[in-house]
Image 1 (tube, rainbow over the protein chains, first blue to last red):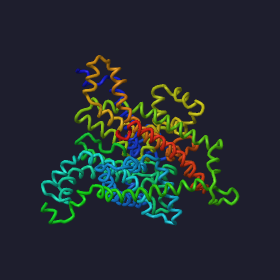
Image 2: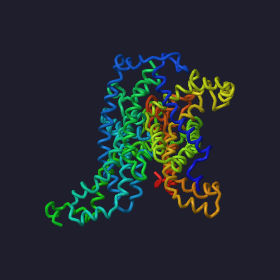
Image 3: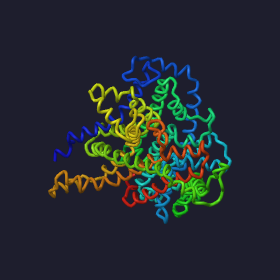
Image 4: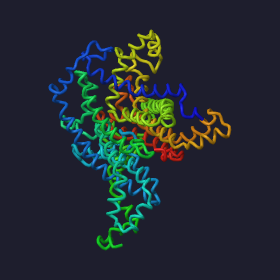
Length: 273
Length: 305
């Protein structure tokens, strides 16, 4: 019986090894932000410096516009996703009707199919409609998969709201609006917040769909596209690392928040991104 | 029912849940239906057109010749290469993910549970490009892998691996092995989370019952735990397989620059302007994932999501 609560050594080693495999690369990103070598990825770095932080801040104005655009797109896409994702979850969690299975399949399709399909499909649709590329074409693409993230988070929570509580509320004289505000919203609020934050992180980081739905000009460069350019045509490699650390921080904070918002109960916040 | 008088109609919907469901579902359905399915449909339509080889213009006439081009040797090699890579990546992820998921689900408690969860979520939600970039650092010829191999006097082993036909190359960052490692690294969390979720749902009582009935731990694992975890693994494989099929950034940055489906589609729709062939290439992953999803649903993978 006691052995049930303690893992064997091979299992522990495999688990820890797996986690190290996941994390060592991220640590190296941080290390390389402080290397003095800017032309190659020499290991160990020949020397250490903090000058890239100030270079990124003062001498690289090309970073600011993509940063602003990424924040803007992520905020709008998340807002759209919160509305549509919640509606979808509310509709599907309560009802039983013919075709429900197919509709729930439809809602996970944008993340189940590779991003490149979403990308090229949207792009050819924009071409056919003669829609010029703009911030809004980027938002359109991002919102489509962000809806799925919010839906996934919300639907799990909706399933746990028991119908009898809603009925009790109505029996006790509350009307539909009161029931929503006092019974349903408090129960789904944290799941929505978590879903919204995950959607934000996902949009902030998206590159594949964006390469198809953004134009080619400087004004339509999101931060990930900027980074992709730096990967293909590198200059001042450590500056890319500095930006990478910043991006990691921006996405890390919402994840930790989302975790604490959804940790009560069995559901894990971002499962099935 | 006094409230109903105060705000007439507010419980109208409570009495008619079907109507409420319709009102809830309509906006998101329209969004996904028009923006996503509409675009997808427009794309599929174009795969039945063809490109005039002389003028370079798209002929808007129904033809299957574009699909015929997929079977040409060079194009078929691209499809085969991508599917094999996706399968290899999926199997490797499942093997690597299981111990982590199992440990997290069965043995981690309290703070170590939170730590495990965040340790998986962190890389999952870290910037995709940052992660690819990290491997460019690691796999570069002057990078850390070469350094560690030399420190351990294993430089000869690394050279031997790189000398392998097909999968090797001048350095890890310019070989199939490199592409494979990066794919596994990037999609691994997608496999861990559903596997862990499925393992969490295995009731303790079932495992105890199995032990009480005389099964060895190995038998319990094979006949009780593994079958119950399978839907989770299948759910994870949806992501690892699909994401590998469609990715075009990773092979472009780390690999021997042989084309995968994604990079081919990107090149065809961009510089080559051959939208019909690009669309036909896109249909392949859609068909594969369509079959995959149907099978996965049969195996209960959607409940494990």
